[in-house]
Image 1 (tube, rainbow, N blue to C red):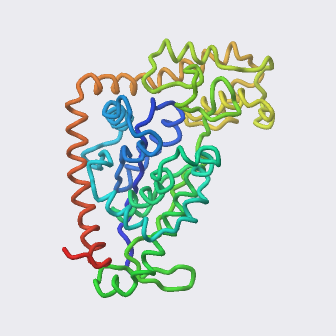
Image 2: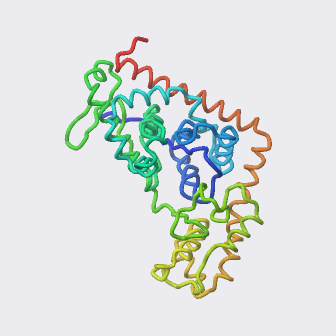
Image 3: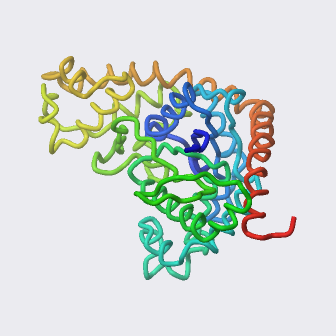
Length: 355
């Protein structure tokens, strides 16, 4: 049975400063995935306007995300790095998916329900309701087969699979007539599919990086306090200050992971150390168990600065002269458009548009 060509796709929104959680939870995984996969990494600027139409520095944010990709080690020559709005086929396929998907599917999405609510119904855009179909289009306009996801994105990936399957079933005869599909099995049933059933890439437990001011909340670029997060553009002094001021408790670090239960701030700092050093929490506690935070925090500062400073320095260098970043995005956009247009040519034929 024929198979879809393996391809990894992922994207990051250009809204606010990237922080340590974004790096450990996403970008570092992107770098690892490129070693053995064909990868497309996108700055999803169309998604950024679903909540706020006008952004003061959208271009700067787009460049900043691209700079973080490159500074972290993504190779834009072997793979593709681009911004979403440079490839109009994303929006074209999203409209077709809007007509394939059902309103009820969108209304059940957790993020839409969280952001809209009964009080905000008149304030949210239609884009906020429909953006999961754009997310599906981002992936499927390249017929990507795998997407690295965290827990908060699993529902969107499931919806992308639902949309792909409904398209495949709605247009099964046309796909077969066009000779552009592949026979796949869904359960025990054979289906002639144009779009793949995209799979999540979950490479071990993702580090869950929490706020430095409240260990029960995720580190967020929207948090009002800059002390709650380590930004990728922070220098060594800023990193040191934020870790020194990070909330802790008066007890020494435990010797077993079980001892971190009920101590969210301690658990967070140990988790950050483990993630930055590619070790387990138990490894870290074997070294620092019984020690006070007055000993552990300086060690965490040294580690964080050693890992992040080279990335920060390269990001600053790239942002000081945006000519290089713009050239990378332009080249990536051209290569992405070439791939996307081949897929959309077939989609237009399948749907019945005159070309």
